[in-house]
Image 1 (cartoon, protein in one colour):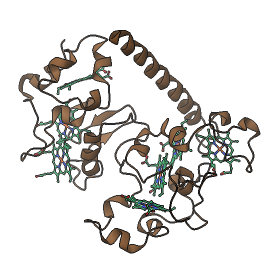
Image 2 (spheres, helix red, strand yellow; image 1 turned 60 degrees about the horizontal axis):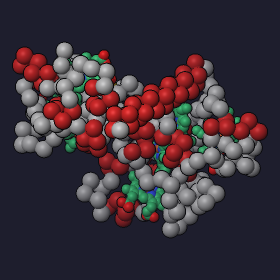
Image 3 (cartoon, helix red, strand yellow; image 1 turned 45 degrees about the vertical axis):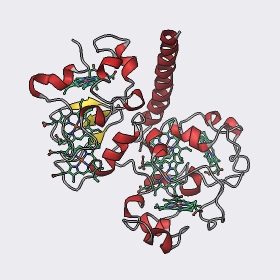
Length: 264
Ligand code: HEC
Ligand code: HEC
Ligand code: HEC
Ligand code: HEC
Ligand code: HEC
Ligand code: HEC
Ligand code: HEC
């Protein structure tokens, strides 16, 4: 029972990746096109090709669901989206038909400007268009870490969703001032270390990988290493909470760390 469940899940994931990849490929093939110009309008608009400005707000699902198909990282660690605010923002930042603050409140979805932002405000100036200064004054860092809009810097917007521990690591390492520590997660989900000592997939489902052979069983791995939500994570290899920050859980000598999972 469990096994066939995994198989179906694996097939679904592969199909989802293929479908997403195809759409992305079509869009990227036309380099000069605006965001979503080459997408199938009916993927989002009830009006399909006949969509007009008047009925454009009639979408087949919430923007949180539609946009996260291609931007899983942006939606995970981000400004709250898809809720009714107590007070209506200034007209420059419109709510959707049900009065929700959503992606298109801040983003010109079919726009072209930097970051596809509505208007020209960015950073603190953007935040203060809706929040008063007091809102940030009470925060330990004055809100500085939030003013980017999403905490996914350093993670490619098309990378698979990472577990919450890896995202925390990336808050500092993704845009580290110290180039020696800067880590990137590219669109294929490969963690690229500054030192290039080892580049490795993160955000991949360990159980699915074992189905293809060459890996030790998950329950054996988990005796020593963490696989949060079943995913390979920064904290699968690095201690997450130790005085000796970033220490490897198992030594790299003789590739010992690697053989905790790889069985080849
Ligand atoms: C990924 C989802 C998505 C796809 C695909 C998409 N749109 Fe949209 N579109 C949106 C969202 C979200 C809005 C903003 C809706 C709102 O204001 O409530 C929008 C708004 C619009 C508007 C209103 C004017 C504007 O720019 O805000 C038009 C016209 C429009 N889309 C046309 C199209 C056409 C034509 C296509 C196909 C080539 C298309 N859209 C594909 C999500 C999408
Ligand atoms: C079919 C895939 C796809 C969907 C669906 C999609 N996007 Fe995008 N989006 C892209 C691609 C490709 C780019 C350009 C490459 C990049 O920056 O990741 C992009 C770029 C962006 C950018 C600008 C990134 C930058 O730094 O300039 C924003 C903002 C954005 N998308 C928001 C949205 C929102 C909001 C939605 C939902 C209405 C959405 N996207 C739906 C594929 C998609
Ligand atoms: C409160 C305003 C706000 C809301 C709401 C918002 N964003 Fe953003 N978004 C920003 C800002 C600010 C940036 C950074 C733009 C820049 O500096 O270029 C950004 C950047 C992005 C980027 C490119 C950078 C990255 O992290 O990948 C994507 C993709 C994106 N937003 C998608 C979304 C989606 C999808 C939603 C809805 C679930 C959403 N945004 C809701 C403010 C917002
Ligand atoms: C279009 C209006 C708008 C913009 C622009 C905006 N916000 Fe918000 N934000 C809201 C609303 C509405 C809420 C819901 C809570 C409330 O009503 O105060 C919210 C909630 C938040 C929260 C969650 C508070 C909690 O409950 O923990 C944070 C953090 C936040 N905003 C930070 C920012 C930052 C940082 C920026 C600039 C990048 C920003 N906001 C830009 C409207 C906005
Ligand atoms: C609050 C910011 C912050 C967060 C969050 C963070 N780090 Fe770091 N990390 C740093 C700084 C600063 C250094 C450099 C410390 C030094 O040079 O003494 C560092 C260094 C490292 C090193 C190199 C250690 C060495 O001696 O070479 C590793 C490995 C590392 N971090 C892994 C991680 C992992 C894994 C996570 C998530 C569990 C994480 N970090 C989360 C700020 C952070
Ligand atoms: C498959 C195991 C593995 C994973 C997954 C992994 N690392 Fe590492 N990491 C290493 C190894 C091995 C080193 C080299 C350590 C050494 O030489 O002492 C390293 C080194 C580092 C360093 C030190 C600087 C450098 O470039 O060598 C940082 C910072 C770091 N990792 C952060 C991260 C972050 C953040 C993630 C998650 C996005 C991550 N690592 C995921 C194995 C891993
Ligand atoms: C926590 C378990 C774990 C550890 C520890 C680990 N790996 Fe992996 N590794 C995986 C998984 C799972 C994949 C499969 C990813 C996928 O399916 O895309 C993988 C994929 C790889 C790949 C890509 C192979 C391919 O064809 O996709 C390389 C190369 C690799 N690992 C090398 C290493 C090295 C070198 C080490 C030791 C520094 C190491 N791994 C440690 C779990 C691990």
